[in-house]
Length: 422
Image (tube, rainbow, N blue to C red; front, side, top):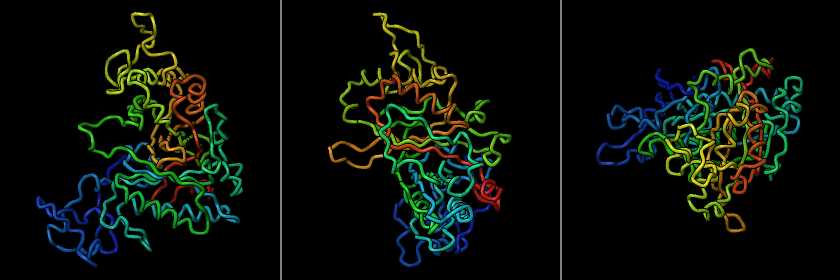
C-alpha cells in the first residue's frame, strides 16, 4: 500500500544539494563519529567527496515512507519506535479559509520531512544529521471541526460522538479536538523535529489542545520479527487484520464510492489514553495474568495450546471441567467472532509519564485503532469488554477522541483538500 512503500527514486535534495539520507555515518570499524566537525557539520559536510563522509545511513535511518498515495501514511505503516499524538483547536475567528491554509502548510511540511528534507524555512536542525527514519505524519478532523468551519453538512455520521462506557474516567481537556495529528518515526529526534515543525506551522490558526508521547520497541531489537509487547509484558496485537486478507480494505478504509465523497479511501481513528494499573497487575502471579488475558505470556499462544497464531479452542476444559480459557478472558471477549465480526486495526504506542502524586506509574497504552466505521469496529468490541472483561480492573480509560482521517493527498495537493475546497 502507498504508506508502506519504500522510496527508491532519486533522493530529495536539501539546500546544500544533498538529502539527509546521505549524511554522516560513522568512520568504519574505529567507531569514531564524524558528526562533530564544527560549523561545517550536517548538510554542508555531506557535500564533500570523501568516501567516509558519504557513508550510507543504516537501514533504520534510510527507510522512507511516501507522503502521497491512495491512503495517508501511518495507518498500515509498521509500528514505529516513537510517536506523538497531538490535537489542535482552531483559534477564535479561524474558519474554513484558515483551516485550508493550515492543512496546505502541514501537508507541504510533512512531505518534505518524510522525504528526509529539512523544513522549508527556520529549520531547527534537530534532525539535521538523521535520515527519514520511517517518519509518517497523519492528519484527521474531529467532530467539532465541522461546526467551526461551517461544514456541518459534510460531517460524516460515523463521526458521531462515541457512547459512554462504564470504564471511562475521561479528562475532557485531553479528549477530542478540532484537528488531530499522529507522528511516528523510528528515531526520537526525527519524531520530535516533525512535532515542532507541525506546532510552528499552526501559527495563529490553531493552538494545541493536548499532546501525548509514546514509544514502541525499536526495529531490530528482537532476535526475529514479532508482535509487539505492551507494558504489562503481554504480546499485543495478535488478531490484527492483515493487509493480505481479502476483506482488509473493506474493514479498515472507506470505499472510493463511500459517503461522504471527501472521505473516499480514508479511515476513522479512535484514540484512547488507557492507564495501566501496573502495581496491581504486577502483584498477580504469571498464571493469574495469563488467565486474565487467555494467552501464554511467553509466546502469546492461546492457553489451549499451539503458537501465537493458533486458533484457540474456546470450548476446551481442564480435568476439573473448567474452561481452559476463562469465560471473561480478554482474548475470548475481544475476538471478532465473538463480536459479530467487528474488526479494527490496532496501532498503539506505550506511554510512561512518570510517577503520579500517589507514587504509582502514570503509564499505559496510547490506543489508536483504525476502521471504516467505528460503530461497526471499535464500539461493539468496547461495549462487550466494558461488560465483563477480566482486564478491565487493571486499566482505566482516561481520554478519548474520534477523528475522520481522509484519504491521501495527490501530488501537488494537500490532505483534506476535497473537503475544504469541495
